[in-house]
Length: 226
Ligand SMILES: [Zn+2]
Image: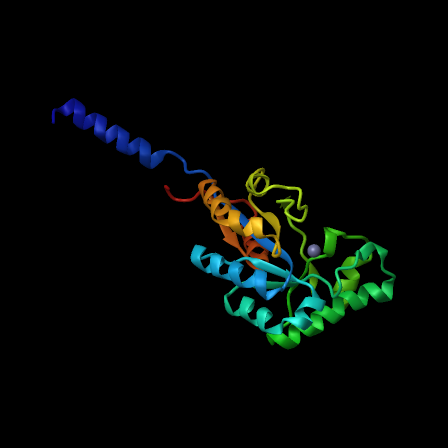
């Protein structure tokens, strides 16, 4: 190798090292409306294979029916959020009923888990002026994401390909990606969704991990080279 080609190799190497890496995007994937064993079990298997942790936002009525599934989700290292007792529209509820929706599910989840869920994730993401206080009375907090991207998988007319596209489009640092436990097409697409998100430099956190990370590091740093 002559001097010139040696120099070229050196310059190429330097350029590779100095190219700024794209910043990482911290995201939290949430699966709403479980737990149902028939849906949660294959989803847990997939998440274990992918080695990621997500958040399951659970409905109290289904928690009552499937306490073992709640325990299995927590044992696998996923975070559990309170998604109300009956999934009623928060805005339609009188004050006392709103309190009940939050507190009943919280009490049941706490009894099963042995610790209190930290976050309330409102059905239909309906947040009105009363909700933060009602949630605070039950000693938790509403999870307020920096950005929400919905796969729209709750709409059965949305195809599997569309779920993949929506779940991976417009993702920014701090985004919550909203999916539903019951939607089989979301599970089928999950490896493709995660592969695309990884290509976009996403790292997968639970609600609490995302919240705490954003509080500690509001702006995403650059990752080391890919
Ligand atoms: Zn829901």
